[in-house]
Image (cartoon, rainbow, N blue to C red):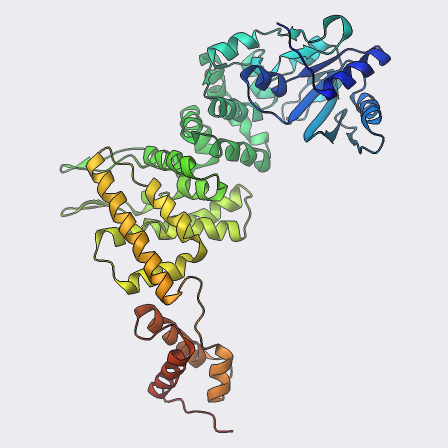
Length: 470
């Protein structure tokens, strides 16, 4: 198989290879995606020689001003060119110690470099050498595995995964992204080697998990993680949602598969990573709050509050950002039942005001999550839920236009309360301010300064607080 590599970068690399009398190949993910017709802005080259020196020569030929990032410990160099990340590495062979995924590296042949690649579909290369320009080098039948849609290790899977256990997560990630299956012998090896996950940094694990979450159908990856045993190590809170229990004719759904269905649903409508995290974690509090009621059957009262607290420990463990990202995910988990309740009841203005106030600018994301949370197989029920949510959306819009509640602050500030009544920062100031907020949310007064000011005097009088006359 031959490829017409007409882009400028390949011509320049080939010229330098000829000048230096070195063997050079495009290799790995770029070749895989080229065959699959997928866009890939990362181009990797392997050089039988110094990858760093070769990269510098290519950059010099393109434009002397190009800055080349050099990583001498790994024998690699890279630069940006034509909206692509271009990376060069010297051909090498690797050996691993038991307690580290960082290999001992030696110079090697192109055959050695093929042997160190993780999967057959990533071990293909295209020659950029004069005699064989454009020819595919495929020592492990990667093209066959692409056609069969199979993820398979290039060499013995037990050695591959023991040497670098991150490859287990990469196998699941590639299968999820590409819609492939993991070869049975490869998957069996993952199950045998899950304890090797211990030598990985949390950050590397999280990167792979998030790539799975951002895949077109993330459920594929999480089912594979669960079946392999990896999910119990990485996200036990999600793994523990497995199972269905019948009692006295009452049966609850399997919350594991429900959560994955919600994640798939949200992936159809949003590329927001943190909304996808919220979809995955929205029901994690159900295991801890599961109870059986003889009249109601299975209940999970308060699971949204429990789940929002559990999210904190998950973010800490996976070293996810402990900032507004966490607060956003917590908010989505905590509020995801509120529109559902509104959809079942006569919608009061005060309930809508409170939801708008608490959700703020994230109200639209919350409603997307609620739509995704409808996973019933009963199409009539699905239609009813969606119709009810449209009523909730309209009510949200109407109340927002009328009362301007989203992200509102009480029109009367704490400073004005202290100045008016001669108070220092105190509980009394907070009580008055909270009373004004509650009155607006309940619709007792309008959301404007004059109404809030009058209510401030009324509430202060009730509390026996007199106006400052000084």
